[in-house]
Length: 192
Image (spheres, helix red, strand yellow):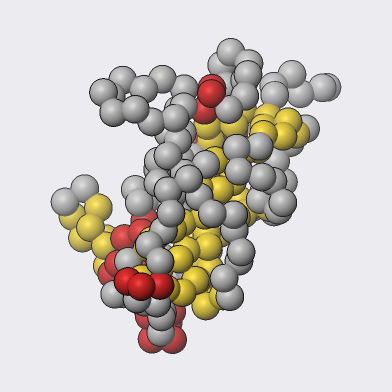
């Protein structure tokens, strides 16, 4: 039987909300400004307005819960303030304490490693330059998805996030999808 739902991958730009309606007074970009999505399309998971990268969209609401589940890996490339240390990477790997809904929460163990600058296109609002001190990049792969989790994790080990780009969900890669570009796909390769 043919899947009658429609599915999309998007390279979400900086400054866009992962929604179609904005009830706030602040002006942020909305997903519907990037592409003429069909009625009933929803984002699967979220990226805050400051974050960039791979976003799934679908007309199948049941898919959202599957993607947000703990079996699906989400990989992020993060540019942090300062030169991230091996000790900080090791602490990220074993789990760190972050604040979550006014409670303390220990993140699950994850994959973390230092990486070279991935060479992303400059975003619409520049990240501070080298005059303000060095920066470095890390790859962090998690299976949970708590509110602003990766940003809180890097801050907890002393290296606040300056830029965050999701590059993979399951086996689906951001690849060379340009900022703001949308591709319709038959299905998401979740690797499960």
